[in-house]
Image 1 (tube, rainbow, N blue to C red):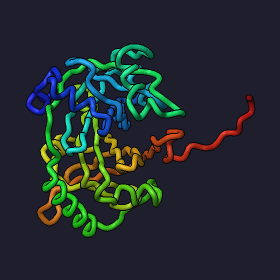
Image 2: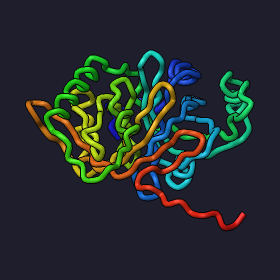
Image 3: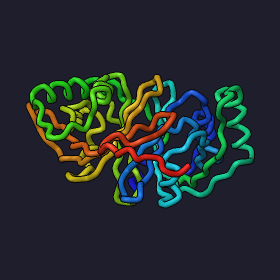
Length: 285
C-alpha cells in the first residue's frame, strides 16, 4: 500500500461530515471472480464511524456479488466542490436494520420515493484513505487538449467494433467524468480520475498523462483496466480492456487501452453489452 498517497487509517470528523452529504459521487471498485477490476456508481457511500465505510443498496448488480467473493475494495467519493477522497476497504457484512439503515431511508431521496428504498446496508473496514484533494482542473483541461491532439495524429486502427455510437460519443464528451481502475500489487482496485480520456476509435480509449501522470505510469503494459464513464445526469457505462503501455508523440506522453468488454450499469437492468450476450428463449415459467 502506498502510504504516501494513502496516509490515513481513520476518518476525521470533517471527513465524516463531508462524506455524509447526499449530493455527491461515489465510486466503488471491486474484483470480479476472474480477478479483474469492476467499477460501480454508489452514491450512498459514506463513513459510518472513523473506521467503517458504509453504503446502502437499492438495486441489484454484480458488484454486490463481487464483495462476497473477494472483500478487497477501492472507493472514491467526490463532492460538489470537485474535491475527492479515495482509499481502500475490506468488505465485512450487510444488514437490513439499524441506525444507518434508518438514516438512508429517511433522506429525501428515499423517504419520498414510492418505488424503492435502501433495502440493505453494507459495511466495510477502512484500510487507508488519501484525505481530501481538489481535482487539478488546469492539468485536466491541458490533458484533454493533449488527448485530442494525440487522437488526431494517431488515426483509427480498430479491428473490432466494441463501442456503439452512443458509448463512443459518451466517452468523447469532455465534461463527462471518467475513472480508471486496475488491481494493484496488494490486490485492491486502485481508482484514478482520467477525465481526459476519449475514444481513439471504436475499439480503443486514449488519454494523456498530463493529469495523474505519475500514477498512470505505475500501470504496467498488458494490465487489465476498467474505465467508468458517467455524466451528472446519472448516465453511465463501464468498459474494460488491456492497457497497451506508455507511448510518446510530439513530446506528449499518453496511454491506450484496447477494449474487449462493455457493461451497462444503469437501471432498470444492468447488462453486458459487448460481447453481445445471446438471447435465450424462456421455456419454463
